[in-house]
Structure formats: C-alpha cells, structure tokens
Image (cartoon, rainbow, N blue to C red; front, side):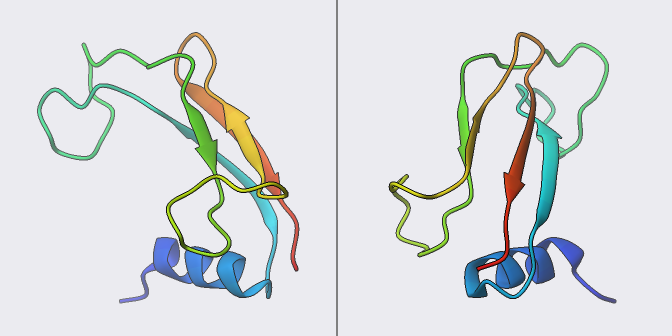
Length: 79
C-alpha cells in the first residue's frame, strides 16, 4: 500500500514535486486522527512546509494561517 502523505512529504522536501496543500487543524478529542462531529477547528495556527526538516519555520518555507474554522490552504512550489 502506498503512503501518499509520506510520498508528498518526500517530494516536497526534495523539491521534486509541488502543489497545493489543504486541510484542517482541529481539536482531535477522540484521538483518531480524523475530524469528527463535535471536534472544533483551531484558528490562528501556522501550518508550513518544513523543506529542511529542522522543525523550524524558516524564511522561504511556504506557510498559511488557519482560518476561523481551522481550514488552511498553501502553495508549495517544486524546488
């Protein structure tokens, strides 16, 4: 089985692919990794592509701020 999240992370970190990343930051109350009824979005969080895998948001790394419902969208160009 192919792990698309891992493949995307590898492609972004190596600069071999790019694209738009969308998602939701939310309070995962039941800890199942999926947005469920009653789990609210978290606003004001910075989401970024950590190109150099150092755990720090660096200049030039694509970033987005989550909206009122926790949604985000960011563009991660190849390279």
